[in-house]
Amino acid sequence: MNKNMELPEDSGKKPVKPRSDEEKQQINNRLKRIEGQVRGIQKMVEDDRYCVDTLVQISAIKNAIDKVGYSLLERHTHHCVANAIHNGEGEEAIDELLKVVQQFAK
Image 1 (tube, helix red, strand yellow):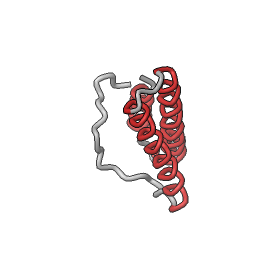
Image 2: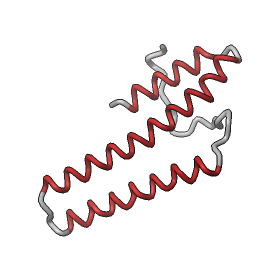
Image 3: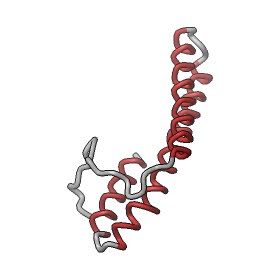
């Protein structure tokens, strides 16, 4: 794996298989719930709530966003990476996948 490979904010690439409307809706619903949880934490801070209560909510948000990320990683692996391997472009796709997994796991 090329250790110096940096992942751009926007690669300009498109998914091999576009997300279905249902997939997009599921992801957006999860993100909207997370957004609501973040607003809830802002309110907890404003209301000077107990630190542990706030930290528990932060942990819940981290878990929720990780779940969204893992579902996107899974889809990317099954579609984009598998397609690249099938087309003889697997090394680059695997390097990119490993880099994003490394970044995601931080």
